[in-house]
Length: 126
Image (cartoon, rainbow, N blue to C red; front, side):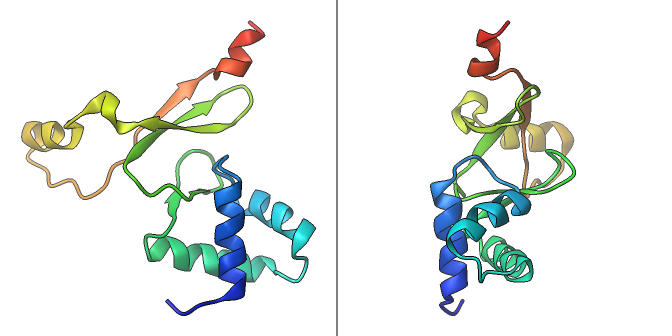
């Protein structure tokens, strides 16, 4: 992948905002410092970074995809009250892929586990 200043801005902004933002959220953040970056440029660079495995595109959390700079194996937790997305270590379900393959006979090439509930901050208000 060739160097691109805009791609560098997108990746830097994603790494600085570990909230698993949507493209729209990223665009709002980027616009404050780099108003010359268009939505088309943002979407194109997010797609290229995800295709190259540099970032992770997380689909299925809600209608809009979220983006994660952490490409290591992990799961996600979505707070049903505030909507924040958090990383959860994959150590909580060791060998889940091997076990699923053994039980089903499938060959699993990718998986996503998402937990939902209330985050620590939202639980304080209970």
